[in-house]
Image 1 (cartoon, rainbow, N blue to C red):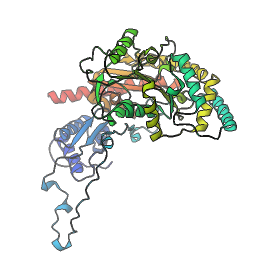
Image 2 (image 1 turned 90 degrees about the vertical axis):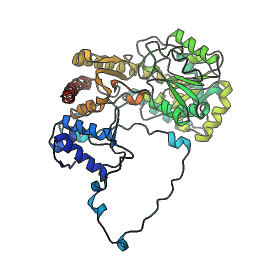
Image 3 (image 1 turned 180 degrees about the vertical axis):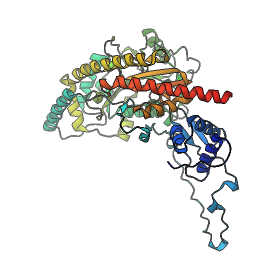
Image 4 (image 1 turned 30 degrees about the vertical axis):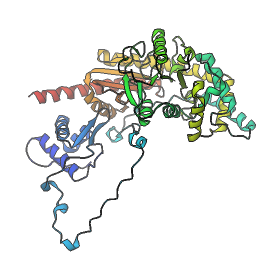
Length: 511
């Protein structure tokens, strides 16, 4: 990055002038992420605190915006520059005859409401140029599960068997019958799900399940209650369909519908994960479950039950699905990605719908996906029926429990009372709260960690309401056991440096 200090006066003013000039001239176009403060400080030969003051001035004047957890970006419509600040070539007085004709821009073609509402999923921003050459990277942003070699061998056998005996006909929109039967049998035994085979729909991924449910239940301005935090995929599916979202933060006993009753008065849908809340790991109590069902029965409303991480709750009591206790067909149940326990790159999931909605779900499913991948579905039917899936889950849960214990112990040793940890039930992720670090410093912390070779993810994207302090979402399932101690050491080092930067910035402001 080539930067040169411009102007006169205090250093932070000269840095501000330099960056402002680059924005005005288009070298940093609207929407582009500005370089990290440490990168700018290194390029200009100034302290990081000086750059922080310059960034603050740019934001106060409307040239930039800060997205918690993502960084500083050039405003989509920066303030108009003065004529004297325009590039020299723009002010050159060329003869009128030599000037290019003014071309009127073409009118924009209007898009659908969904296209204007849908949000791009957060993309990990890893400026690897910040890394030292000899630093080995520890990635705690990878949500994948470690490969299970024994499960892969069993999957190859099932796939080979399916290729030998594959019927000629294509599967229906709801999936091949053997897989639907195997899944329904598994869910009845392991989750207490009660349904007919016609209520089972096979989908290609958990995100397709969310999108299908949103298409059936949500229209413009439909009020939908969602747990906060929750997966961005849940929130974005409902929002893209036109929903008005109501954030309902759960506690240790899960979502309390009575606590949010006033704001949910006109709600027609509530999305919950009672068996294992993602990402906190909280389990909904029996009393809360009964209250939630009664709430749905008392009005025209549906409950959408996500069962995403229940498979990995090793060492704790297995709880039945909310769907199994539903007496009036108000619960729509969908399962996690079955295949991630075997091979993370594969996707397969299912939705169990009430009989009253069966035809609507089947019709809308056929609009987007009239047939699945038959070979894969027949192989999965055999894999489930032979008990290989249950065996692979037991092996995986043991691995996750060990990694969870190692990471929690390491974080406690290196960060002590400076952190609060949620979700210790071996689901493959931890929520780590840093109460002493304001949320606005989230990006600085992750940049500092990156310099040591540690990739971190902010939990801000999982929250509908803004965070007041920094919260990290650590994915440890794909990390090696040996790397977890290193990860804790590097996080502690980055946290210490960031807290020192905070103290210097505060002292500078009060001076």
